[in-house]
Figure 1: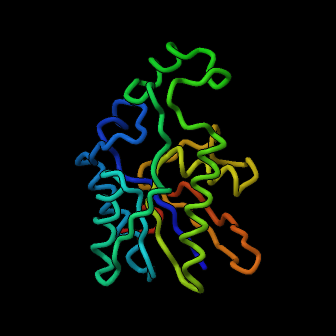
Figure 2: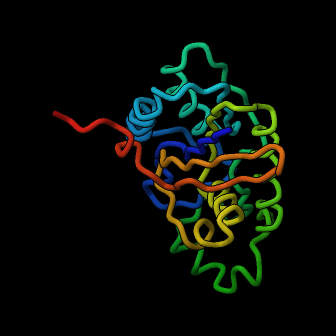
Figure 3: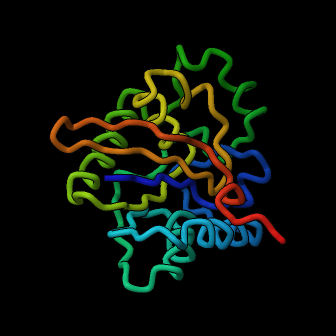
Length: 199
């Protein structure tokens, strides 16, 4: 089966380069346009299910994409949520590096550890994949969570600390249920790359 993993559209916090964790920050207008482009890009794929993080920016992205797949219900999967950044959520990245110069050796209060993040997102995605056979599914998640999964599946070739995920970027995986194994087919592609060339 094939699995498409999409990052949500842009929010104001993305635009301001603020650390955005489990806070419910909605899409901005650019994010809605990005989600619509992603919807068009994926419109020819027949999805058996659409799963989303419970956070509003992911849910709204899923709703916009689902408008091209009228008979598909959106299923909320809590394990697809973003990393909890604890007390550093809302800081700009510049403020974060100034306030926590010893990160990752000393972690901010309340932050989800990298090990817990990798385990949580892997188990959530595998749980979704195992419910479908010989089908395609779509999952909407977040930058740090998707990167953690990419890093694990690629063996460290891409993902956390390496890949700067674009809003509404598309990554595709295959999953072999008999071996319980994911394979990365491509990652971090713009929706525009799926659209037919303009005449």
